[in-house]
Length: 439
Ligand code: MEV
Image (cartoon, rainbow, N blue to C red; front, side, top):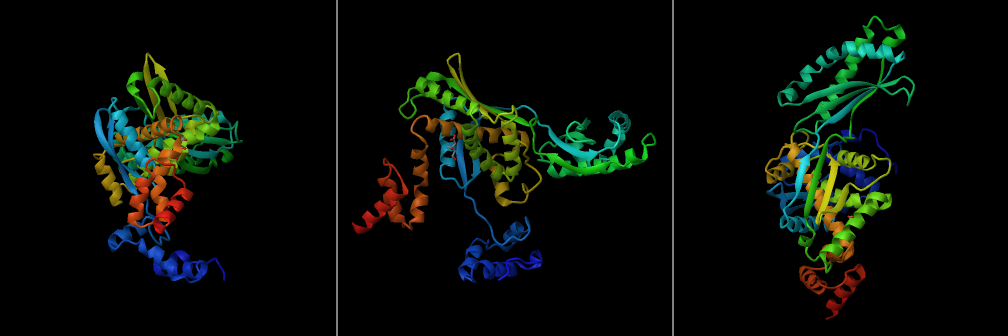
């Protein structure tokens, strides 16, 4: 049977599923059922989700959890977290509670600038292009007035436009490097619309520019697109307290804990293999919130990891140190996110999540997300240098193992009790279920 098809997107949803099940699932009716069980019975809501993308055949659920007790700049928040990994919400909640008793998170948006680029080729001398750009810059920008009008009314828009000579990288390669403030929007569509408009106008203006020779007039636009590298859209979060106030953690005295913790962060600063996992722990918190608030986690991930490698060596995004008997732990990350536009006003759970956070501005949401990242990192590194990660992780994973082994609710209750203070592994849980069956 052929496994390719043309015109698939034009089929109805039912026809698409039939084709998939006939082609890849041996016509197994169960395969259809799996998809349909996840359809929403509210047809309008289902249609809304189907309209998000092409070829939608079902919905893909993530649990939406909440982590209360986040004290951020003296205000309490309960964070919505969409994530499938068992221990993340528990770890965030534990850290949040711990730090709420020690002054909470202090956060600050350091900058909020986004970047877009028009990449083009110019077959002439750099100086001639610079003269042209300086003469035509205002005219070029004026062309975007209609697109930027609303954004300017909100205090944003294009904040700078530069011509960059990139001919040392590729012959004839130049860029328009444009900076934006998109206020509460992530702004991808806004930025890309401005860029395409600027690119088109650049070509027209060059064509009409009499000092240019005929080959100089033929500017070739390669592409116009925003950059997901946003090192000037930065947020910082910090927790700190006197060392003694750290308390005893998993049997470790405050000074011993602080020293081990700081050493672990230093290792992540210096050693890329560890840095990647260390930062992955941060992103557990960041992504869960980015997804729950309808933001683009791929954009955030790409930008954050590029930032972690900005020195040329991939390194930790967080820092820990002692100063005047005070323990400090901080995180600095770029976060190009929004609270308006995209699916933020469309997806009912996104709207719910934003409401839970008090409908924050993008700046406020950046600070909340950074706090979630720092909380997650504190919990992970705190466990790693004390009890090890598996104890807490497996405790949260126990229900997944029980579900995998088809345990009923009574068995689950008994297993949770039994494994309260015991090591958990798939084998141990299986043994336990077999023993209880026999009993
Ligand atoms: C697991 O999802 C995240 C950790 O590996 C992070 C870390 O090692 O710091 C626990």
